[in-house]
Image 1 (cartoon, helix red, strand yellow):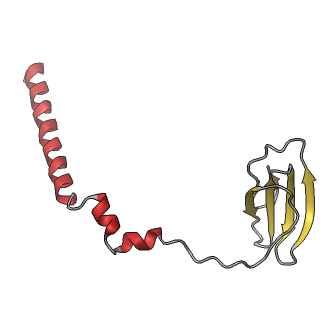
Image 2 (cartoon, helix red, strand yellow; image 1 turned 90 degrees about the vertical axis):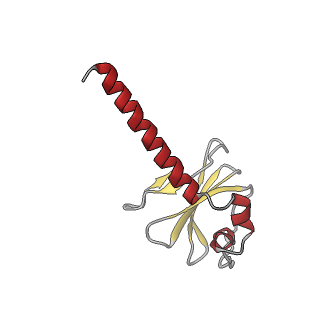
Image 3 (spheres, helix red, strand yellow; image 1 turned 90 degrees about the horizontal axis):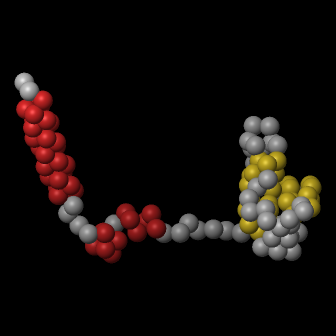
Length: 121
């Protein structure tokens, strides 16, 4: 078999695979996104916002809170704010356990390392 014949055979196989893909797409393409979204099906349930209940109100920041992250113990959390502070909270007692003043208010996120509980900013 010459190289030209092999190339032609591969091109034919590629064309066959493309037609199979198009057939599967047409089979799955039975509705538009708008029709699916307007139907009362499971997509509406996915978009439904969860019911949120206020459990604790932690007071301490003077600016917008950019981020919050729970520690691995499920009691401690840290928050980063526009006021340039990281505050570590005990969520059970609603008390600040530590307030870290930063040189800049450009801290946009914060986190705890989950296994040892180290703070990451």
